[in-house]
Amino acid sequence: MRIMIVTDQYPPMVGGVPTVTHGLAHDFAERGHQVWVVAPSQGARDVRRLEQKVRVYRFSSFDWPTYEGLRIPFIPFIPIRNLLKRSDPHIIHIHSPVVLGNIAQMLAGGLRKPVIATNHYMPFNMSRSLTADPLFSKPFSNITYTYLVHFCNRCEYVTAPTATALNLLYGHGLRAPAGVISNGIDLKKFSPGERSDQIREKFDLPLDRPLALHVNRLSEEKRIDVLLDAAAKMTGNGYIALVGSGPAEAELRAQAERLHLSDRVSFLGYVRDADLLTLRRSSEMFVIPSEADLQSLATMEAMACGLPVVAANSYALPELVHHGENGYVFQPGNSDELATYLDTLLTDAPLRAQMGQKSLEIIAKHDRAQVLDQWESLYRRLSDEFIEAKQRRLQLRLLRKRFGYAPPAVTRRIVRTGELALDPGISEES
Image (cartoon, rainbow, N blue to C red; front, top):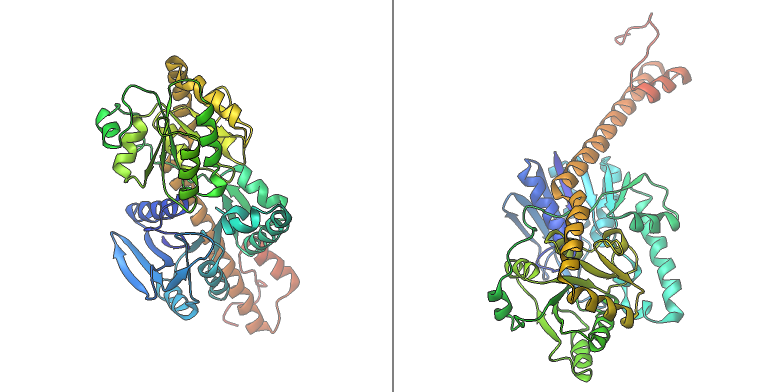
């Protein structure tokens, strides 16, 4: 198949959406599909290159003022139209309903191409400054969802990575056909492994203390401030490693200093993938206090490495973390409860082993190979439906051309079966 992926977040940007879109593009290419990616460039020039087997078209862009690392392209309407005509994709898969996604959607209608939209976004992702203010948070949330749902309702099909994420769209008026398809996880890459003292030494982490790992963007909605408060209340000898960077890093470091957490918490910053995989395997558990995740790839990767998880009872996290089975969920913002669960897991090795095994069982259904099969099936079905609809339109035009009109009974048959039904006494040549 010919597949076009449209996204405003793509490497070198770091995060969940760039990881998902990059993974899909390259996995589909490895399966023999032709794949085009439309994404922002990292500057004021368009860049086109073949990245392994994927054709990546990056369009000139500028920095998004309220989201560090996100870039918004200018309006490359004509270049995208030309690209669509040249590539002639069977399916257009949009992962962000902003500039590029809107252009692709508008052009797809005129070119009669089926569009799938996958929603990864929440109001928190759009503007933290507004959503942090109680006066503006609810109106801004409603406006954001109105826009998202309006965009989605113009697509042939809509997906979300979790039932929670999809229900949020339904609750705001989604009417388009829709379903849940996980972002997926490569279980061949992410799996349990031997602990490495070398990786702990590399990042100056203690060898003789149980380690809780956190991997996420350091931003307000990830609620790492709650994790730091919990660290100050822990009674055991557990240690916490924070991986990631972001706009809240300076404030979080200052908070850790105020709480005297130098012997309890380490900020590791950006960690390359190979080291991060080893670090997961060398940790005792994973912790995520975020209040704005529609799935959480970081949690899935930790579970695939056999780690138990403590997570906020917020949005889609409880779909991954089953309380008392593969970890615990705590009331969002409750640092006392979080500290209790951290101490419980960090001081009980048999419990960690039991819950870690359950994590492996839960994550199995998110295997990337199964997810790719789901996408391929959906792509083919929508593409076939569009081809059949095109044939029906051609048949109706043929009837009108030959007879001046399409009899209602014949029209109904064409719409129902896709077959051209003429009066037996009239040949197609007449």
